[in-house]
Amino acid sequence: MVKYQSPLRIFNPRAVQITNLPAYPTKKGPPLFLLMMRINLKVALLCMCTAVFLITLSLWTKCGGIGGSSTTYASSSSSSSSSSSSAAIVSRLSGSIFPQQDNQEIHEIECHINGEYTIGCRKEGDEVYVPFSFLHRYFEIYGKITNNDGYERFEWAHSHSKVYRPKGKYDPRGVFMFFENYNVEPRDRVKCVSGTEGVPVSTQWEVQGYYYPTQIAQFGLSHYSKNLTDPEPSRKVIEDSDHKYAKWTVPIGATINRTDKHSWTHYLEFTTPESLSSAVTLKLDHVLDFVLSMHVNLKGNGSISVMLQNREKKEIFNLHYITSDVMISIQGENIYHGIGLTSGWRKITRDLVVDLQKGLALLDKPKRKLSRSKLKVIGISLHGMGAIDNLTLSSSEHMAQFYDAARWFVKHQDPTTGGWANPVRRRVALGFGDLEPGWYSAMGQGHAISVLSRAYYHSGDKQYLRAAIEGLRPFRIPSWQGGVLATFLGKYAWYEEYPTKPASFVLNGFIYSLLGLYDLKSIAPVGQAKEANLLFEQGWSSLKGMLLLYDTGSGTTYDLRHFTLGIAPNLARWDYHATHVNQLLFLATIDNDPLIKNTAERWLDYMSGKRASHN
Image (tube, rainbow, N blue to C red; front, side, top):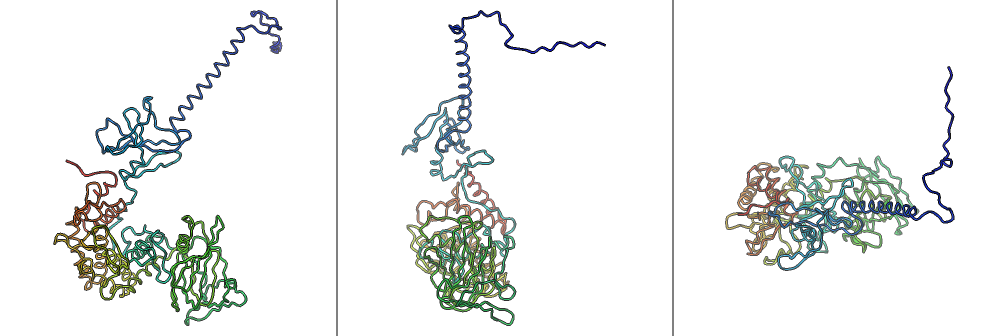
């Protein structure tokens, strides 16, 4: 077989001769029509690039925006027939104004508000867009731009307050309502947590600070509730002189000695010279656990210091617990908390982060919040003369703080009246007489009874039960005689949060007082629960008879001053309105009366913008 082999041909472009085109002399250059073809090709290419750029720019502007500030508008259509329909929310982000509709032009337009003043709006076709900042102030609604997985949207809400639906029937032995979510100590109106009493010191109505029974009770109830809902705390014993011995550094001139306190336990005694450099010190590197507890017996000028460090910026903060009655003071970067002048053993429990924050609030620095995750304990030092035992760092000590509150109520109850007085003047509103220092609050009494009832249930200690029962006395005494009892239209008994003249009939404080009465009547032995039960039933009947007086059709009123003073209603802020809803939801688990449940649900709807029907 003979194989056919084609010859290999290599294409040479130089060898291709084009004969159809006339040759032109090289000296004169190409003819004019060829130059024009080249120019037209370049122009066409340029036009195509420009078109692509303009299309891209148009799409970018329409979908997202380029540069500029952020403004949010709500649209109002001139053809809309229902004011209750949801407004179309359009956000101008980074320079984009609105998504255009049918290429209609957007332009500025003045909005004339009730014939009184004008604001700047924008118009597109039949739609008028009103700035949300105006709507926020005008209608008390809330909104914010959020970003979820790169998708921006505007979230509109009529209320930012939370409602906590009960998980079961309200139990006086368990969590107090939704107070596991309460954090009393970090509030701005709390000056500090007292080193002598272990309870918050309020500045709500007096900047110097005072003990406010309602706030102290909320402090105790929140910690009792958190103890039932939080995980088991982590604890690290630093020194107990029995099984755990810390490695203290003892300078020349200072001494430590582990001594018998009783036949079954020991404690650590210390003495140091006057200079701070001669302190007994302990180096630590401890994170997350910032609740310090210990038994302490300081003498003379004895003190205990704790050093905290910001793990990011390496700042060091010094907390000093000193023998002084001054609640809190600062000197440079040093924060001092007085734990009293009384000698003798006692237990103190301190949240180091709270103590730090309250000290920083006194410094002439911008307010800042330090996260617990960014701090660590780097050292403890002992100064002067004293003794310590059971030095522990833990993530929480809720029951210790709860009992600090319970003991405060036992210690500071007026033996004559059974009440816990508010030591400051209170001006509720123009038209009401001022409440002079020493006034009682049904809310404060009720909260205190809730604390004491739980303390009795948890410990079995009858001193708490006795104090709770004695706390019923102000409920029997008319407000004009120094108690908390008022009467509405001569028919309904009402327990006043603020026992004003004339009566104010504050709703949330009254309901809290009812819960205190319910707690005591449920926990006290049968023979000692009779009066609490009578007062509760009397108040419960009043609540059912008066509840709807607080309904405005779109929210609630805080009190009934519009009735007693004949003035405009005092509308409840959304956070107080949410409290009303929360309270009724919990009360509905106690008594399934449809009035309580249906009212709670209707008031809850108001928080979503729903309104009562009109004629």
